[in-house]
Length: 288
Length: 161
Image (cartoon, rainbow over all chains, first blue to last red):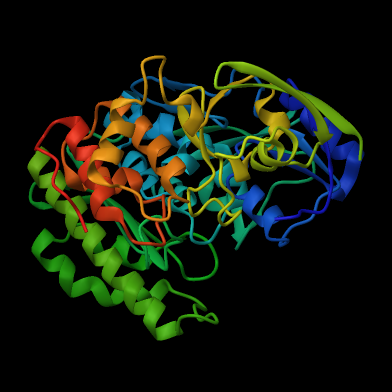
């Protein structure tokens, strides 16, 4: 663990961070909780000239909640969100998925904004936020824009973020009355990176599917919404969903890597997706 | 790389050292401040041997920079005992023989301290879940779970291994 030396700059505003990252150029990286970046630096998979630390920027660690919107500051820690009443009641899928991240130490320090910006293809947070239809506010100095989670990812560890641009807040609609959620992941050890994971929300009304979102990850390219399955499921009776499961993998792309075969990952993702959908439907029917 | 002057409150005492900005808290503690009850295991945040409490919450000291915790209060194993002796959890570890080689023990005790303090442990499954980020290469987990369980008071401690 003898990392290549680097410099360090602590800033007290996101504007100052953007300015520093633009001035310092490609050798500068932003750090918040650092629970993804520090392991990369420690094992030599990443090298930086200077870290710009935003972890003490004030005003971005809170959750605000109305009937229409949950807004989460980018610096809110996973542990905060896992326990926050607004999240456990308003976005129970997010709270449940966060419980699968690393271990308590990682969750005590790691931030939601960091998970979004890092966009690990095995990450729980990008998957769940894509399924929940979250929107990210991206700040770059005085410039700000909103980007939907679905349009934020450009592949594994790749996002639309430009140099100096930072995830400032994450907004999502609170869970609808009568809707249910499901989250399943397969990892070789608890807390390890997921080989495959799936997240779903469903709302059953008048004994048919009125709304269903399904996403999977672990297929190599970041979170993937299973649009074909989602469309086919609308209006279907819950008992008929199992017959549509072949549609889940129809949206899968290239999935092989050096560890697991394409067929294995596809199979795992489909099984996780089926379980997530079943849980979401069950919870929706129980809530009705 | 310029040296950075950092002051950290370690077990109630201010420690000030100048060191490179890229030093992790773990390296700062061991190499600059001679705090050796914090162990270097994997350096990747996986094993839990370097666990410390920062303002009461467990953190992998290999995964934060010392400069990031400048001014904060940290607790290591040596800070768990009170004026009247070892903590209840430390006593339980002794009673249950919850250590073999002892290398993971500081991290185990700190993780268990946070978990017990949370008041959320109701049984062995909760304890295992709370401690799954702390690896014991001697695989002495049984006695560790026994020790924590005895403190949360659900059953009498039993002797493991």
